[in-house]
Image (cartoon, rainbow, N blue to C red; front, side, top):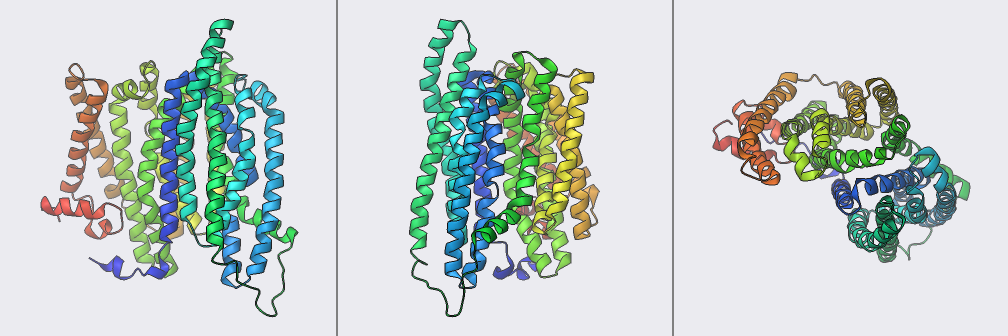
Length: 547
């Protein structure tokens, strides 16, 4: 029963600091989605679309300029520090810093110079141009912060990266909402004066952009203070006798670019569907309502599905590390067991989330999308399965990345993007599904990505899946619990608010779902040792005399 734990040693475990950092990154992304929902309340769904265009453009330029820099630079510095090449490491810091400062400045100038054309000509959302001008300097600031995080990782410190990620999103939430309210009030006056209500949403979005910029300035200051403290430990280390300095500027830049090229490409392709979806949708409608509907798509459907997926993803991060630990020791049988347990728990969590959200679409729309309940309910009913696809795609992709198969992940994401592009174009032009086209296209693209990455991961680990146990039983139990939740909601809705109904139904159906899985003996004891929360499930199963 303790077989997996006895064979796992501290030396081969995935760095616990790395696990905590990635979990902290997921927490930061959840805070970002909450900020998106709050922005919708303050600026309206139009304002969400205006801010989203600016952030999507920023995300593209930021990824080009500094995406993957912290990981690549940290790896380069750790290698040299481990060999005692402290002066080479110091020279590499300087070279990369100069390169990233110049590249960040060029990126900022490019964003600010092209802001009007990008917003008005490409996205056809003219109110985003001013917001993009405000966010432009963040490309440079983020380049600086990525370099500083890379310095900290080079010293073996993962905590600053985790702290900076969460701090950034908390500051954006606080300052963004503060300036959104301040400038939104001024925007209301301008809107009344010009008889154009979109100015109120635009100025609210400008307030969010000011908050984003100010937050990044404070994060850079925070990282500078952290790095100065961490450098004191190594500042007195010298160059060993007979060792020459080899870190030229060209070598430093070339090594950095090679290290970050594939991760950068994957990030760009993952971000692809958001801006391309908006461009296609704007091109098919050609009216101002397109921005409003896109705001509902992001702040309603995208926010809820994103938070659900991130919460489950946090539980699978340690499982990926344990799988790779056993593979490095060539204990393939245990690696396959741990990998299968990760797939199983991912499906168990996400199947319930998707079924519950589908069944409770009306109540969820009332809570998360007030004013657009009918449209949001259609999105939840037609697209909640995306939660399952996103989590499994991440799990399979992360496993392949840790196994060194980054090119395969890059190819799979590229293929999924092509499917999304074709599906969205056909649905918008032929199907006339409107904004729901992006929901359905996301399901198609996500489905292809999940299947391709899953096949590659299973082939890489040579695993034979027990689909009855890990897929059929959880899916059937999720459908039954969702149906029971829908019946319960019909009884409770006339007497309770949407939020209370949603909460009560969630507690009851979740309890029934997990009790059903335990009674069906869907989990094995050995499997529970490998997953977060497995001990709790095991304890409940023993109380129910299942194990």
